[in-house]
Structure formats: C-alpha cells, structure tokens
Length: 103
Length: 159
Image (cartoon, rainbow over all chains, first blue to last red):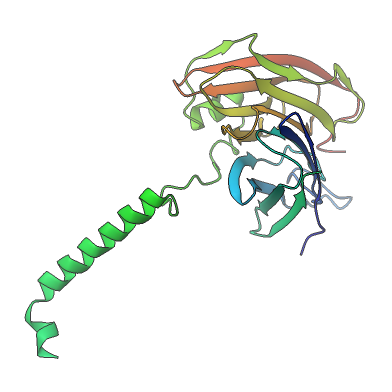
C-alpha cells in the first residue's frame, strides 16, 4: 500500500482550507533511464474527497501533475471537528485513502 | 418444477420489470450511477489543447477576466511548477489546467461542486517554456479561459 497522504484542514469563517500532500511517483511515461528504457506511466488518475462522509470533490488527473502531488482547496460550510476523507486511484488500479479532522 | 417451465416468458418479463424498478429506485436514491464518469482517456491522451477540449465536449473558447490563473513567470524547475486556477462565475461545471507544450496538455480536471469553492492550487510539470491555461467549462457549453506564459529554465520530461 502506498505511503499515507498528509491532510491538513483548517477551519475559519465557516469554511475550511484543505491542503493535501500525496505520496506518488507520478511517472509521466516520458522519462528515459540511462539505458534508454522508458519508465512506464504510473500516475494518479482520480481523486475524490468527502466531507463528513458526503462526496464533495472529484478530480481527474493526467501524467502532467507533479510527483508527490499537492492539492489545496476550500470546503464551504465546514467547521472544526468535521471529517475530511481523500481517496486516490492510479492507472494501475492502486488506491489509497486517508482522512483527517478539521482543526 | 412444472410451474417454473409453464410460463418462462412471463417470469422473465417479471424479472426484468423488477430489475428496472430496482434500478430506478437506486438511481432515485443516488446510490447507483450506471453512467458514472470514467477517466477520460481521450482527453488525457490528446496531444493538443484543441483536441483535449473537443474530447471534453467544450464549446467555443473565449478569454475571460473572470477566470483566474496564477503562477510564476519563470520556473527554475519544470518538474514542479505551482499554479492556482479559479473562477467566481456561477454556472461552471468543470475547471481545467492545461499546458500547451506538454506531451499531454491536459494536466488536471476538477468537477465543480456546490460544496467546494471553485478554486484549486496544484503543482504541474512543464516540459518546456509554454503557455498555460486555466479553462472554465460552463454548464451552457462555453469554455472561458485565462492564459499565462511560463518560462522554464530546467525542463521536466527528459531530464
């Protein structure tokens, strides 16, 4: 299983700023090693976020997102104590989910 | 045993009826989406911005001051370039980040939802100096964009 994501959610003014750092190689499929072999594409394709169990965000990514992806957004109607869940799925079908409490 | 064989067509029709009723119930409850969005391989395989937009069903492209794109003018490391895309416009269905000169111009696509502000920060790879676009795909089919030029002093794809 992949390394855990770091999720930080900070409440303020009825909203919460969510910052996520995912651990993933995000191999574009363009890179060649010294022998000239292409490193196969391996990247997160889908990201979904839930807020207190309800789906609130869905994103599709391509190989152009940087390694160890960073994502930041603002959740409306959120307060301290709420739960934010994040799940990603990559092109190999591997998935990872983590959650955090809004501070 | 004989009752099962007597009217096979009627029981199949019944089964289909029950299946359809169940599907309708589940659809109504929002628990089951047979037409659930799949990762758009055509859009993420497109080699040009125009092809990616066509694969996403985007309509006429026009520049808009109401779509925001922030990022550096010069990126020292093309592997990690930070951008923020957003819009305050109502009626937006999706927000995209695209890098014109990348092998795959479509970098990311966000489904805009009423629970999240339509603004996202992320880091993208830039293969070389390029124009970068934030595109808001509207419910009415229009595609509104903001554009920046980013110069890269160390490219990311072959290095």
